[in-house]
Length: 185
Image 1 (cartoon, rainbow, N blue to C red):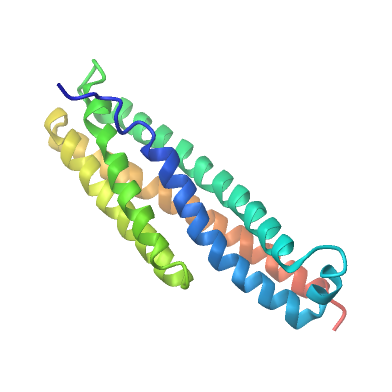
Image 2: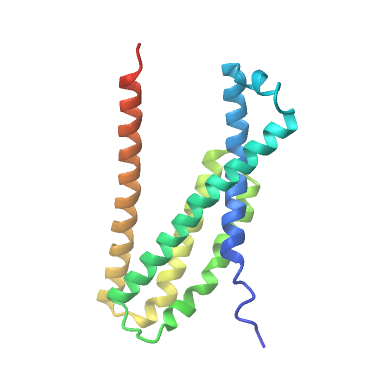
């Protein structure tokens, strides 16, 4: 007999491992920036080298953990809303079918640890993992959907995520431009 709760901790582990891999890379870049700015030497008067690195790592893991946890919450909500709108399954069997998709993210997060020296590598692994999960999601729920429902779910997901990502990029560019414009050059 197989225990259905055996992989229930995979989402948490995936978030922690992706956060760790991004944090290690960000910490390396941040320390380099602090050294070039001359701030790192001043910090060494108050903390040891190991203390600074450990503090930065813990802080970055917490920040990335919050970002990935928020993304998981949004993803779960978007998945369930898309099933609400387009699925003909009224018993929740579709949700049970997609539970094992967390294994895809777990494998992706473990692979991301091998690439923690590259932001592009980590983001590529995350993007590929997300695409594989999306294909898995559509494949698993396709039996409970009509062709119209399948097309609706795909477009709903793509449009919602594209809008969200492009909106965040737009806001980041606006904030960056306003910061640059406010500098006395």
